[in-house]
Length: 333
Image (tube, rainbow, N blue to C red; front, side, top):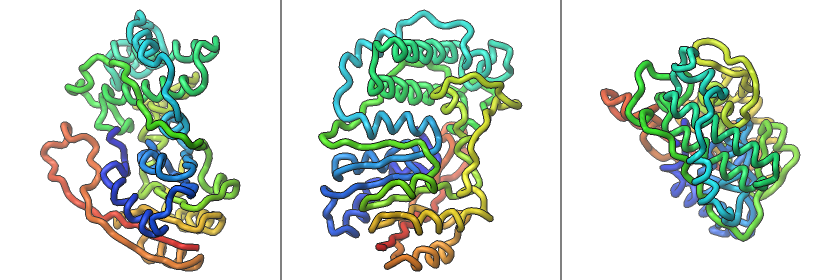
């Protein structure tokens, strides 16, 4: 997924810096990714550490990480299950079609009518299979993660769901095909949570804590609301032109709240090594971050220049790519 703040391009660099800080000894370590997003960093460490703890307050992230992090052995009959879901006759009046496709009269165009109906069809069947115990929880998360990623590929947006596009873009014209969200198999057991990070930090402990909170005012619950709607598939009345649902507002996106929330997280962290990914355009400046972390141990900062997030390359062809700096703040408590 083309995801705000994704560490996909930085994952090797992060692995190198974190491994070096802990003297290359990762195999006996518990690694916590407490703002996990799509789980790229947790996936990078999954087979390099003893245990990964993954957490995010957004439900779509929880589903992705229940599959990518917590699932550890191959899903039986996955190909036949995907094939069956792909060949189902389309549901005509499901929640996504009714509220997020133009043909239903919703005036919203997040998906073509065909793809909206197919999302509904597959989502309803996955839930039916779970209720009837045709599939277990591990298979449920695998199939649901597969649906989230497959739906995202054909969404008619500039990558985030804050708004839909007026015309159906080329990638959104393709018919949705449910493809497998294949995960890294693992001998070890891992744990995924769906909680507020500042609440969870008081309940867990480990060796390495990786922090990748929101950098700015953009709320993930608003920018990815439709993925939450597909994952939860609950009944509510979508609000406004964009069909927004109620969402949790992170204090890390609010300038007056961020420093207190961040210090609370550091204070109660029962981890020896703490790494914070941030950048030079964040709501919390370099000095504030340094001053907070220095209170709790030995502090260090490393930086890396990289290309900033662009919402959608096909929709921003006239925008020149520009760079920003990724900061990795390091604390040894």
